[in-house]
Image (cartoon, rainbow, N blue to C red; front, side, top):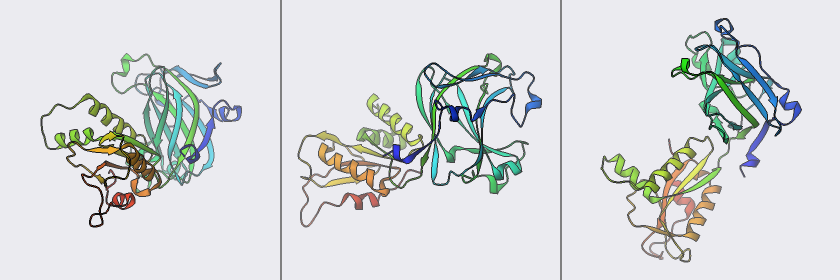
Length: 317
């Protein structure tokens, strides 16, 4: 499903896409401040990936960049970019120039971190691109949000870190595979099965209780946070303990921030919840607990439909 929601902007092993990118000697806003221009190289390596490498010399204003000029890229209906890259452990910037922004000296930028020696799929939500005035003045209110319908240029940039830049020799290396745009959609892109121990840990912290939190709960929570910050639409299901019982024997309960205690859910019931969450817009960007009620549904207390239970849940802010 997620592949169908993406559109490839650049496949860097395609010559026509590779040649659309260039590296000038400096940035349009502060060329005159750079004492020694960066040394930049952009080429295809033996594995048919594009390599953006070089060295930035100036401590505070030095930078290296790749630029792709666009006639007018309309990104309405899209929520962000996906960049597949092999990093060096340093941070890079993605910068957009738009038609309205150019008239007022405003650009939009987002920062992303890389992992040294490891391929990563970086997601950059468009809402994470923040405006910056090239003159240093305040950004007009009407330009605070990126105009997705009129993107004129995409720039990839490296600068030395803000913390102790004088200690950084300025070398950088970023290998690029592709850049895609992912569409805005109503349903969740990804359903993550977490565990009820996370809810218990969050509630303990919220009420200031000093309790030992299991390593499993900590790692599960970190996984949840990574998904929430990824920029894709999601649903997080914190399940009770798995059982091998036949599904449908007991009523299901979907709740948020409850004190679960010792709760269970059959694997088949959990699978039904996950499939429903993947297809129901009401589950988009929602985190909830899923477990079995103590009793089987009856005529007086029937089992609720999963969709109706999702209706009452609140999305994460």
